[in-house]
Every structure is written in C-alpha cells, then in structure tokens.
Length: 273
Image 1 (cartoon, rainbow, N blue to C red):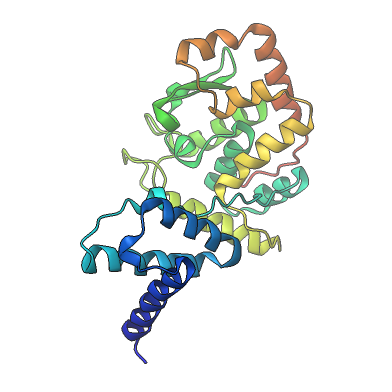
Image 2: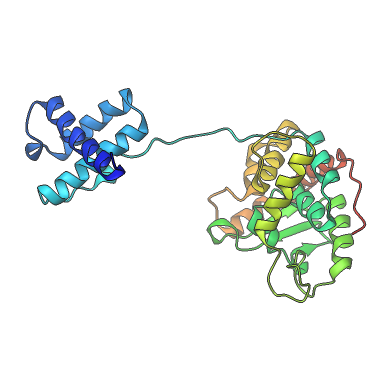
C-alpha cells in the first residue's frame, strides 16, 4: 500500500472517529466541538495520532465542506520542557583541555565563562572588551538588547593570547582567513565540540549552547541570586538603561567575584597553535 493511500485511509479514519465521538455528522460540528474532541484525544492518544486526525479533518473541512478553521486555536502541540544535559566544572575543564585547536579552546572558555549565546560570542569584537571595568559589552543580543557581563581575568588572558595569533582589526573570533570581515563559522564550532566530546567519552547531548546552561547552573550553585543571573543571561524584560542602573557597584563586585571564582576552578592547559 502506498504512503498516499495510507494517508487517505488515516484521514477517512479521522472523520469516522469524530463522527462516532459526537454521534453526528461532521459538517454540523462547531469550533467548540472540535476543541472538546481534541482535548479528549490528547489525554488518550499520541501526538502523532492527534496530528493525523487534525490534518485529516483540516483536509475534510477545507476541501469537502469549504470551511476554513483556525486550527492553531483548536489544537496546539504539547509544550515539551526538557531538562538539558549538563557538564560538571571538572568536565568543562576536560572539554577545554582536550580541544585540539587554540581558537576553539578559547571560544569554549568564552562561552562558559560569560554565558553568551553562540551568535553573541561569535560576533564579539575587540571593542566589546573593557579591561578597565572587566566587563564584556554584549551588543544586539536576543530581542535586539544590549547587556554587560563580567569578564573573568582568566578569560581576558585567553582572549589576548588568541588574538595575538591573528591580530584581526575588529573580530575576536574571525573566520579561517584572518582578513575576512565575517566571524568564525558556527558549524565548525559545533563540529569541534562534538569531536572533543567523543575524545573525552562524554556521552551527553551537549552543544555550544549547553555551556551557557552550565554557566547559569554553576553560578546558582555558588549562591548567585536569580535576579543577577537573569541580568547576566539577558532574560530580564527591562530596557537598557534600567539594566545598567541595576548593575550597581555592589552587584558588579558580587557578580565579578562569583564569575572569577567559577573560572578559578578550571585547570586549563592552552594549546600553542
């Protein structure tokens, strides 16, 4: 039996099932009926079955009855909330130490010690690093928002060491050709991390973004308050000025101390290439 024929049978089965459920013909059903039906279906069937019924009924109403339903308001996919895999500080050290190339070592260190998103770290420039305040200016983050995050001393030293290998006029992590105006390819970063995870035999679902999760979790474990962490991650729904004013000297000191304590636990051996 062909896939198309199988789908046709499934769609016909969906129409029969809803007809049997209400004991009335489908063309008399309202939006309220459909919501009731799918709410019931969600409790007893898998999402794949629910999608098949939704698609079958959508086809039936649109092309047989010429009715246009707003199906998103009738049935929505379940909100899946998965707990991401995490690395311990010791495993983070292991990953960075076993990374073969300095550019990826420093990049993974930067992701972990600043909590930046992958795109935010890739687009860092030399002008985003403020040595006098030991802060990183994250520009145009998610939602078009800027924020400031503490820069650990160990990360600054690593960035300086790596920058001296390419001396790009603007980017901290330029592409393969140092004269390029584009940053390092995110695909290469993802592949480098996958390779090192295999090398160190860590069988977890870890991506570059996981280092941001590790940053947040490890800081919370050290006692950093949620409000400060929310600011560090750029999750606060506040305007830029409000964010800056709330980063008081006391808060900056506490956050900087916490982040430096975080990175001081790492035992890093840097590559020479």
